[in-house]
Length: 340
Ligand code: PHE
Image 1 (cartoon, helix red, strand yellow):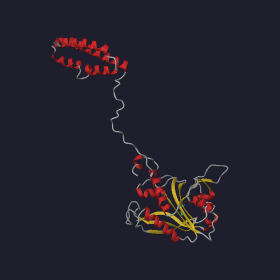
Image 2 (cartoon, protein in one colour):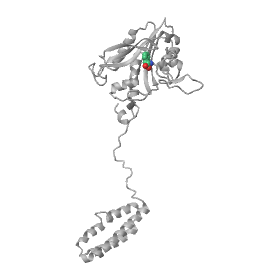
Image 3 (tube, helix red, strand yellow):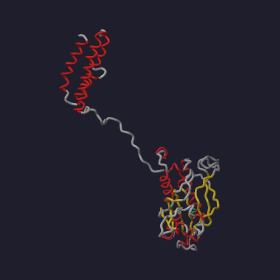
Image 4 (tube, helix red, strand yellow):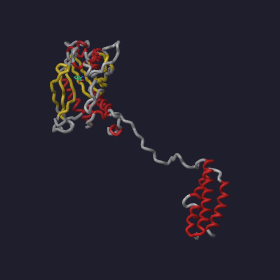
């Protein structure tokens, strides 16, 4: 059979088939038979090579017409019946995509761990409002009226004409006051919370961060209890072989006051990046609750004494993780957070 005969046979076959296309599936079968690379029409196109030169235009034209007929029929069927219905849009055999799990933020993880250690030592969690008044944040904590911490540069004041004394608490020591006002000694509380300071945001400081404060009040509480408590905590939380250093310091609400350093848990005192090559890490500020604070809060300083301590949670997270920019903790970048 010559190619031209083959083409006309194929043409009558296709003309017969076209009226039988009655579904998207039938259209797809038609396409697979005639219109794909290994289909009938393409195999005729390949036979064109053997056709004598002078016959080529005629045969070529017949083939082009046939292809146009078949393509037109297929396009028409597609319009009529839509795409092949058996095409699986939903392939239930595909493996599932990995699920992303949320996780507890490293700051919250750290607060939880700190709270659980202090709870096991008998401290209860106490909380107070973020929007405080001057009395609880400063006044009853023995801050003099002209103390620089009350300055606009440190404190965010609330714009409220009726209550000019409202502010965002600058430390969790405000909760110390509330606890003493409301509880009778013995008091053993731990007070985690957010605090706010009007400071420029940088790699080392934020305008909003977290503190945990501790308060212990009873008869005969001394500096030795403070030392024992902090050392027991730090040996559990950071390093069981830690060494300590108590440096004198000043806070209006404690007397005497100190800052407590611990030998670096990473280099054990030799000096490294985390301890800035000093061998020591500052872990908290602390002191014996000032008698003025006790009396302002309704506790008799002749009968009771107590200690308080406080530290910044973000600094703890930076020390433990080695992250060197505090802002990374607040960017909510999954690539950072998913590492903890
Ligand atoms: N409130 C102090 C601060 O914000 C920390 C502190 C708490 C110090 C309790 C001593 C006792 O820096």
